[in-house]
Image (cartoon, rainbow, N blue to C red; front, side, top):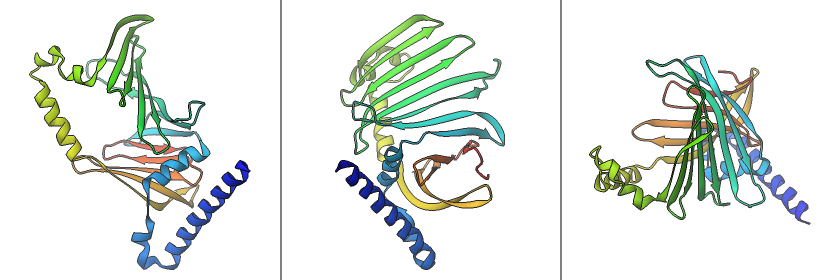
Length: 248
């Protein structure tokens, strides 16, 4: 019975999407309004199929690294969106090397954030930092490793972090942080979604675009195909992420 309900939901979903694409082709003068769809619908698509994505990071045509996008729903029932990979890190005065990263977002079914894990590491010198953020409990926990040795660890709340005395030595106090946070919230990025097309192997394919727009830094466009696989990410910087075989 559950299987039939899920199968029926998928059929209805794809019929609606097919109708949308046909309607935009039959009535192109109304295309702008019809192309828009709820952003949550695209996010739901990632977790409906739980397809992994592999994107190659480029800057000005030069390959820099790779990003793996892994949506999953494990036994805890939360939505986990894992982003992990590596990129070529260039720091003036230092030898270029690979930096490795991992971000794991834990979300409710309505995409409210329940937790965030961040993992960053280098090989030369051997260094790693792991951070867990609990937005519900307004707390954090971090560990820093040098080689295999635990060098430092910290735990606390967001409120205690704002009152950290070490920040005062840099001229940063709670008032400045709160003012900056209020400014960021008042200029929060706008998230929209629409249908569109990309080319792969010389052929057009239908996709959904998630668009994150910020008045100060431009917009990020994320292309997702009909089975929830991320194919392309365009940024306002000189960085682009592309799936294998996608036409540039």
